[in-house]
Length: 76
Image (cartoon, rainbow, N blue to C red; front, side, top):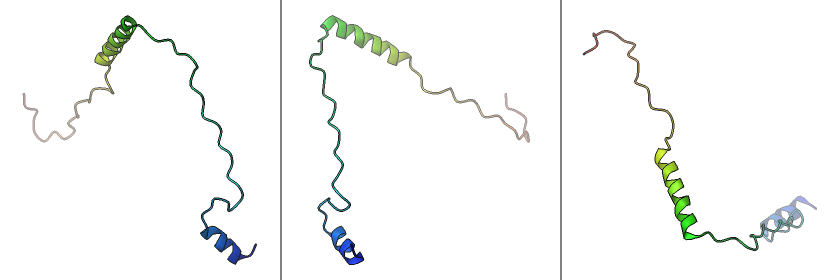
């Protein structure tokens, strides 16, 4: 293929330049049957999640910066 033919082939966006597209795998299928949960189980799970969220903390507390310049005495 000449350089001119390559240039013309690239200007036509039909998706075939360089060969056919590879086939994509099929997406996974959902499970056939999912057991429904009872309202009591749902309430228990929600309470457990709410308790876990209420006690969750992100990161460490920020330490107080150390004063390294002591030109003035610390105020009490």
